[in-house]
Amino acid sequence: MKISYFSTYFPYKNKSFNEKYTIGGGGVVIEALAGVLTQKGHEISIFTTSVNSKTIIEGCGNIMIYRYGTNFRVASGRFSFGLLKNSVKYPADLVHAHVTVPMGDIAGLRYAKKKKAPLVVTYHGDLQENMGGFARRMSVYFYNKYFLDKILSYADVIISPSDYYIDESRFLGKYRDKIVVIPNGVYVKDFDIDYSKEECLRKLGLPMDDEIILFVGTLGPHKGPDILLKAMSKILKNTPDAKLIFVGGGAMRKELELLSKNLGIEKHVKFAGFVEEDVKPLYYRSADVFCLPSVMKFEVFPIVLLEASASGLPMVVSDLETFKCIIGEGWNGIVTKKGDEKSLADAIIYLLENEDMRKKMGKKAREKVENYSWERIAEETEKVYEELV
Image: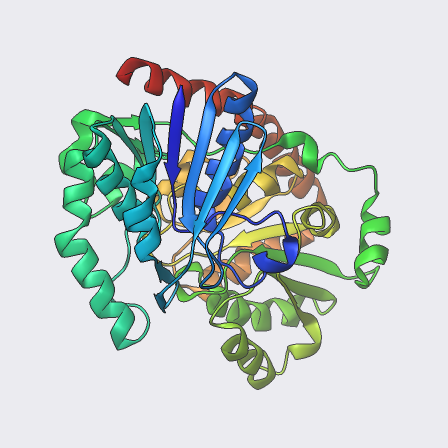
């Protein structure tokens, strides 16, 4: 089968590009699916944007990557006329577009119509209209009003990674009759590293005796990193040897650095920035608690929670309904009140003070994640393709 994937972002082989290029969940999912499905004999074409204005075609076995030059950007959105117009030159039996940030999904819709090919859409979350500057707000409003419904209406199948998110979303509910729930996955073995916690701390230059709270993800307002910083000021009053590590870049970094100074906790906070995939397991192994205090309905099925689970970490999250697809309250994590730094601080303090509970939750987290291998997820996705073609 010839499968064409569309996403605004897709990881580069050249790792130096990825730091300047917001990959996001869509790109990670496509990369994993393509890797498994090519082993099954499928031919994969990936249509995406370039980090700059240059168009580049990359080949790797049965995978072809078409990166079309970016003409302009609005916030994290990248607009490429080449992606929209020139991708239709190539054949496909089926189109799979990922709704993340515009415009990969719009190009996928156009391609499916031109080729009269079945269209599968994976929905990675609502775009919020009340975030960012004026240009972003207007762009998201225009996209939600004029494009999103066209994409979802035309799709033969919509994949939602979380059953809980269908009702939480502003847009998915009316399409329930053609939604299939297929979760995201993780390569569990990637987190079975040979280094001990102490060796990881040493390699990363982290204090050997501090208790590590870890955040991994984009430093954007929807993730609630500012809430975590405010909680940290409360945590330190109870646990003065705690350290908070932010892994990932984003628009809020300078704002967060300033906030940590204003709170007087900058010595207890590290901004690691973008790290390569082979380095991330070291941070997870170094940590005692993983935290994701998201505050907006942009999250669907965060892969970082699967990574933390694969690393055997207890997790503290906000009470977004969709997190129930991974987190069982008191079982593999603790659910806190969204946007409430006291609730967040109390949960983290509880785990830092109770090593037995951390280990118990971490063990349960690891047991649960065994069901989310990319091989299994790819098989479920392949069944959707076969039914359509």
